[in-house]
Length: 356
Image 1 (cartoon, rainbow, N blue to C red):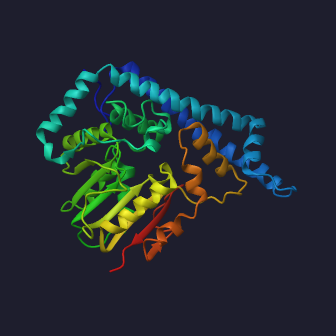
Image 2: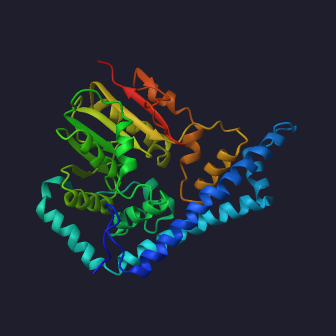
Image 3: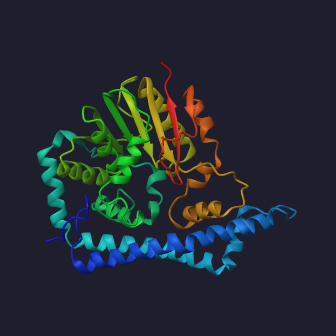
């Protein structure tokens, strides 16, 4: 028998396991609050000095220079170590109760089969299979328990700040959707926290979460069923959807595009433009643009994430003119949308509206 739930999260197998993950969460919180600011500060200071040098150094030179800053060394080591410890702790605990968890998934699938579509012949794209995203063992598709592990891992990532989905519920309000939408699509929905958040915001809407990974969708479906929130989950590639032209009122891509190669990202934007109704909105919440030659601590952090945390496409995304890509398919693009009286932290919101 597993431990009690933590918010909307399935409990660990034992108190020892839960305590271990809590310890890792505390380590991450310490690193984010004490060490990472020192890394960023050191990067900014060294970068400012490099700006005066000729020839002008590259960001790679700044990244290497931080190897000699003790605070940066500590921050980097803790980022990598806590990530690996997080996956080990969450994966190990759920494998101990795998039978119980599989039964929970099957119960939801028996109770609400019409709300989950899994394609047994689905072929995962090579770019997706090539790397364990965020270092999660087996990636999101090759471990039957990936949804459970991801959700517990996200508790550590958010250092407990999203245990009841409150961050996703807030982010759902960042999308400027007017009136009473009939259909909303959540691109790359993962375990469906933003999907259920949309349903709570618009109870009368038909809300769909789409994702490549079957284990994530199975978990998202079971979780939504337990919460009593009726949303649809489908295994699909966001670059080739089955929705008809002009059939969707609003779409969201939350923390998705930095995980995609450029050509796939363009295909997804094109598909969003196709399925949206005239006047419909496509909201993208993701990393902000960083000039390729910027010598800063935040730039070094993004490169670290790419090289040491399974984010191979993130540098190309933040360096690219993503706004230009959006403008190639939408006439009305707000590249830096700001919700009223809300801080978006380190994220940038881009809103596209299809011409009426």
